[in-house]
Structure formats: C-alpha cells, structure tokens
Length: 316
Image (cartoon, rainbow, N blue to C red):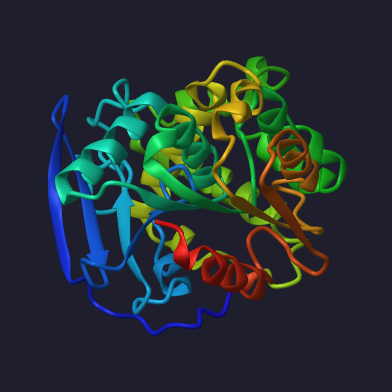
C-alpha cells in the first residue's frame, strides 16, 4: 500500500543473542525521545520491507525486529541445517521483550500485520504492562480453524489451483494436515524435493490473496532464499496452529482491558476473514474495528492506519 513517509536508513541496528544459537536482528528509526513503537511483521518468515514507513518518524521511534531465523536474523531457515525446534510463539514473544529491554524502552505501541497480529496479541497478553496501544492490520489468530480455512476450505473458491496445491504432497497425506505435509517435504534430504515443495506452497500463497483488489504476484517468491526461509517457517507454525492453545488469544482478550486498539481488516480479505477481527473486537472493550470495504489482505488501509497512529501519538 502507499506509505506516507519516505524510506530511510536505520538510525541504529544490531544483532541480539537470544539463546539456542539464535540472534535476532533489530533496527530503530526516529528520535530516542519519541514515542516508541514496534513493528511485528507477517509471514511467519516475511520481514517487513516498508511497514515502518506508515509511522511518522517525527512522532515515533519505530523498532523493526526480524523474527527468529528469517531476514537478517541468524541462522537462516533457508539453510536446511537450521533447527527450528526452538522457534515458537513463546520464543518470539521473549525475543521482543529482550529487544525492548536492550533498547531501554519502557512501553511501546505494537503494530502488527497478518501473522504479526497473532504474535502482537500473544506479546500483549503476556506483557500488557509494556503496551501503550495496538494497531492490528489484516487480523488473524492462527487457530487450527483458520489454518484449515486457508489450506483446505478455500479450495472451494480456487478448485483448480487447490488441486495442484493438494497434489504437491504424497497421496497418503492429501486428506490430512496439508501444512504438516508440506513441512515434512521441506525437511527432505533431497534438495529437489524441498525446492518443489517451496514453489508449490508459494504458488498457493499467491492464489489465496488474489481476490485482493490491489493484488500483484509477490516478487519475493522469485528469490530462492526467501522462498525457502518463508515456506519452512510458515509451515512450521501453521502445522502447530501457531504453537498456541486453540482459541487462546480470543479467550485472553480480557488481559488487554485498558489498552486501546484499532483493528483494521479488508472486506475482501479472504486469507484473514473479517469475522476474526470482529470476534476479537466484540470481546475487547476499548477496541475499534475498521472494515475497509475495498481492502484486501492488508491493502487499501493506509488512511485508516494513519488515523490510528495519529490518535495514539499521545499515548505513552
């Protein structure tokens, strides 16, 4: 989507050791005395390339974190030797806290998109005292039902593309957990099997967001390093329903009482259906829901986001 602020180089950046041989990359823009905000990217495994541009650098000190094993964090999930067993939602929440403490930030606004809304909600429910406000775009909670919706139910909309997606896994796995089946293929000792699985998964990713009025094929899927990193991480998380007890984030909304929030979702976002944001909003006093009628999966929402960031500029 159009971003109102120009691309700039980080004022500070670094790699922070977080244990189990992992280091997470972080970068910060804006005056140290400005209002802190953290950007929580989607995927899993798709570091934001421009989300920080939605926040005014004259108002916010914006921190971007590349989640474990993706982007500039090390080691990369693109390397088949990288063990993902220590990569869980609980670990990512701990990583966010470690970066906050490292930077000496007391409290910050949490801005998450897509998978980043799941992680942002998990973080805020674990550390509500560290959150001033939340802005959540393309809301999802990564329940088993939501994963089933994307990997199986949307075959009713794109039957020919879904048949190819389902056909990418062994016949014995086609009526089971497709995310888990792809995760197993991506752990194969055969590079050709891994590469084909990554291509097949990304082809389906590009399909299920294609009803978005602003849809264009994702150029990052042409990069073999990004493709492998992304697919290993997204199937790792989806095959475990986000490493969260099913429905936990909706049940935990009471912990966010007193934290103002704006939930922004597109009416035409079939990847993250608006009912997910609607259900959260109903249980969350102090939250506002904005449904962008011509919006897709995170697109068409720049005006609503800008209004939210201006509204929360005074929250410290």
